Picture (cartoon, each protein chain N blue to C red):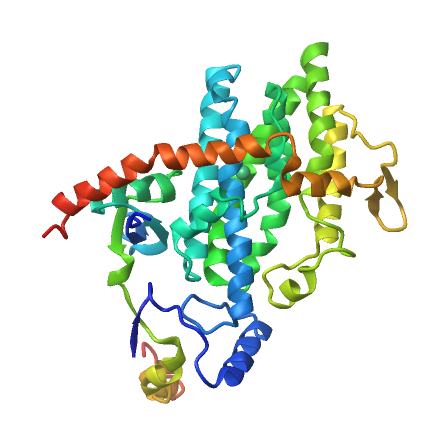
Length: 324
Length: 94
Ligand SMILES: [Fe+2]
Ligand SMILES: [Fe+2]
């Protein structure tokens, strides 16, 4: 009759067919699936992978921007960047919590990242060479993340959807502070303008690739759409990003690095030039400019923090309310 | 592998007079750290004036596979609702 919310994870007992039908019916009626509910193993596995990858991306995503905290051009820019990077840590933690509710422990999730088994968004394997890169990341990368994340607030898994509501509320500050940096640079000296253009030149295509392989090649699309853990296809989201970002670049007075980019009056969307998918797969495959550094930074943080985790656990054992 | 810090469920009172509401979970070694982590994680923008943390293992829930049976007793008692009753025309303040 009663279950503990932390141990509600179980395999499918007998009568799995009826449960599967009930599960499908919940999806059809747009009812949320909650952690103790029965769910197909493949749904649990796919979601665990998707949510934990998302969590890892938030955490690894702190590194390229964190690189500029000590060198932000003013105290105000510094506190803003600190707050932004702290938000990303929060996003990672909300998402780890949602992934854990599917029955995988936090340590298992983290160790899958550290061992290189789990993936994270390949955008964070690019370096932040100048201050303008911090602006480009907020504007483009957080802008792309928002487009990816807003539909997930309506996904079928309750804890994931709720985490995403919190995240989306915080993301628009991220995008605006990035755009604000780009605006300031684009309207500054010729040198600053060039710096903004250079950042756009380097971050544009990786941002366009953030939505993943084209629909014709994506293996996850169909099942994930059926399960409502993805609500739009990669290409639909990518188009939305391009359509909203191109006019912003024009307002900044910056040029999108794509000679084939033009408005298509028939489709009412922008047409773009070919995407270099070889680069995408090369970076995902571990051979981007910063893959090794990023992973090493996470391994170091984990190892350097080990004594803190142990000391706090020991302190709690001796002095906590549960202490014997 | 060393044992993980326990998991806690976090409840935040968003303003005086309102009930605490579940907002998510986190890990912490003890209750003090759980409260401080909850503040940093869930109230970075003035979202709360009070926080409760409860170890996840201490939260007990109804079993979803028995939802129907469990809540059945309240389903057919329409007479518990004011709309069950016919109010004769002209009668006021009822
Ligand atoms: Fe984020
Ligand atoms: Fe963000």
